[in-house]
Image 1 (cartoon, each protein chain N blue to C red):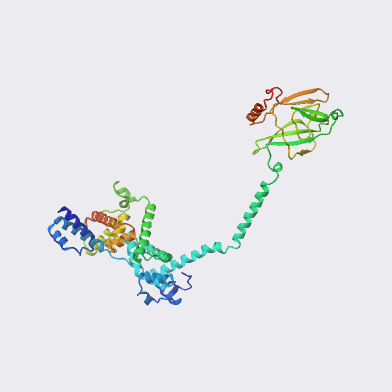
Image 2: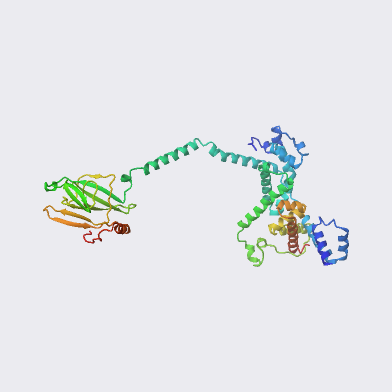
Amino acid sequence: MSAVSTTNELIFSATAAGQGSVTTPRAAETLTDHGLLEATLTGDEAAFGELVRRYRNQITNYVYRMTNDYETAVDLAQETFMRVYAAAERYQTNYAFSTYIYRIATNLAISELRRRKRRRLVSLTGFFQGRDSSPAEAAELDVPDVRPLQDATFVEGERRAAVARAIATLPEKYRAPLVLRDIEERSYVEIAAILQMSEGTVKSRINRARTFLRDKLRAHV
Amino acid sequence: MASNCKSFKLEIEESVGGTWFSREARAHLDACPACFDFFESRDSLRRLVGELERVEAPGDFDFRLRARMVAASNARGRRFSVTRFAPGFGSVALASFFALSVTAAFYFNRSPVENQPPLLQTSSTFLPSNSDDRRQEKSAANVGNEITLEGSEINAIRKVDVVRAPQRRQRTITKRVVDHGHQVAGTAKGGVVDSAYSSAPVFKVPNVKLNFSAEPLRVVLRDESGVPRHLSMNPVSFGSQNLVGRARELSSAVPADDEGVW
């Protein structure tokens, strides 16, 4: 990644075209993920740009569901791609590239959640909650509002927000498998590879996560 | 039935979107209300989570990513350039180390007489003889623990400087004994001693061999009127009494004489 002289060079395709890269953007679309990464290793930045285009939305959405913060999600998604680029030489083709990039994103998201936990100050909402509530619940003022709302759109938005909050309050070891399974729709085998645990553990954690979620969303389920 | 329910619940749990079930599972759901309720709750929960709108990356995602990668690359380059392009960084470090080593070697290899005060510093003060009587003695010979002066003159008073606490401020205790040559091992018989300190320049004796004896040191001193005084000194050394005692036992010498200790 060399220094740039114009803002156009900050676009992967423009940089690739300017350098007379091996792969044109149109040709890069036909390559597999492995092929794109190998081309990236040879200095083909258009190939890396294609990888970014393929996974940027998935990774951003996944990290957003993990952190429940859009700006943080975008920041961590970019950090994920930077790490993929920096560690491209160490990439092993034993796993699918999607597994590899989801694993990096998961590690970054979990690190961010732990950092938040350390940074968390005494919340005023904690004074209004019981002593037996979990630390994750203590950070949120989750007062269920059972009154029916008039506007159906508003009800829908409220329900989605409640679901997002409920997911965000799950412990991280349950949150990641649940998001990967029910939102990203990854297979159990792939989730086990991403989280580096056995398939049985993944199933057990997803089951526990759904039970927790059902208890939190009892008003909506 | 219970075991069947457990296996069907596992199938419900693992189904993708609740759309795929085996024929047996569908039949069981129709027949078992508990499993049907479980399926309903799981299905509604799955729909609830699945209905969450997907967020997308912002439009300038690539642009910002590229800018971050360039910034990280430049920062990495600057970090490396500090040591890479520092003029003569290695040479300066090597020269500094060499100069420090030479200084340390020079400091520690200086003469210990000059630099490091020993525990027992010996210096001799040579005095001119004031009286002809003092020159009558021509020689000295050690007999036992006595110094017999025959045909020689006692030409010096040796000052024995005992330095205590050498690491701190030096405190000097001066003892005057009769010196003949470089060795004093006993009592000077007929020696001439000037009881006063001399202001003559002090010559440092580089290597003074101290003969150790467990027996008390007897010294005969004569004042200016010629009256002899017999003095006896036990060879007491601070911190080495045990060594002295062992030496006495080994030499089976005369029991210690406590008289004359000063």
